[in-house]
Length: 106
Image 1 (tube, rainbow, N blue to C red):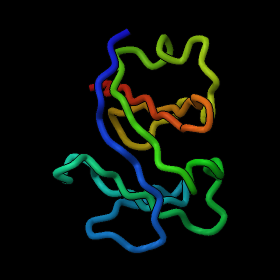
Image 2: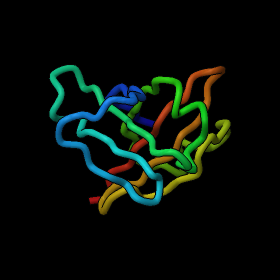
Image 3: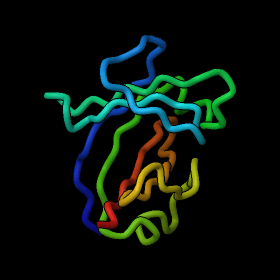
Image 4: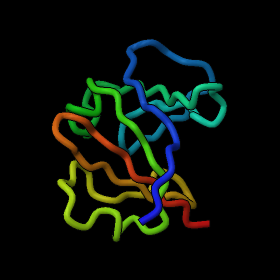
């Protein structure tokens, strides 16, 4: 299974420029592709259903060719979902570290 580094996601309480709001997750997120160092900032609203570890711990994200295959045998933190058209993501946990897998479907 091919995996390529995509970004580091860092939780923050501070509003960031050009945030996108994901209403189902009660989450504001920036586009890591616009960051020189591939940083994605995550700002969670009170009552966000996202796992506590994602709200408090940085994560590393990788693109994968097949999300379902990449998840096989892993400890799944957050089941696959589509935060936007053309993208499926899921989070696994390796020790105390959350890891995001991203499959671009377009």
